[in-house]
Length: 68
Image (cartoon, rainbow, N blue to C red):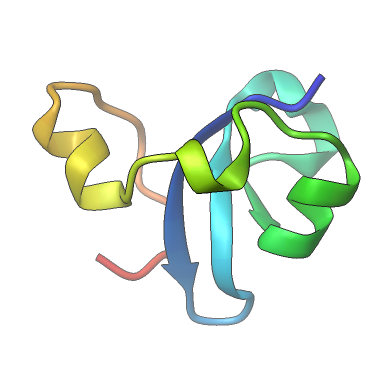
């Protein structure tokens, strides 16, 4: 199962979802469409933005092309 962490933007992918590394080859970023097709949880609409995720005290390593 693909676990989403937050919604974000990537230079190459555009609107996407940062996913947990347990997603294997799908990690760390999936386009929103692929996230939905793969049945990611929680639902895309329920994911926080990157800013809200970081402000909540959670941390994750930066992805080089992810926009801040």
